[in-house]
Image (tube, helix red, strand yellow):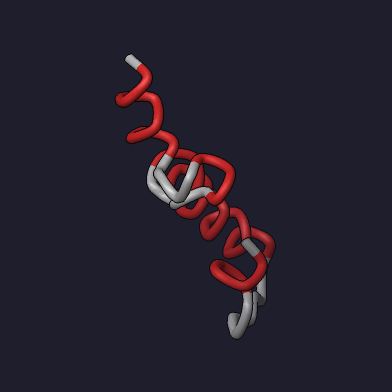
Length: 50
């Protein structure tokens, strides 16, 4: 997350950090490829298990 969401960004207020986290966490939890899931997104992995 540090490299993908924060690296190279400068935040002047805490609200800016909160906004980045609110946008990034759904992406991470639903769409980002995870090596532990054989490079599938969690959504795809769960669909294949069903």
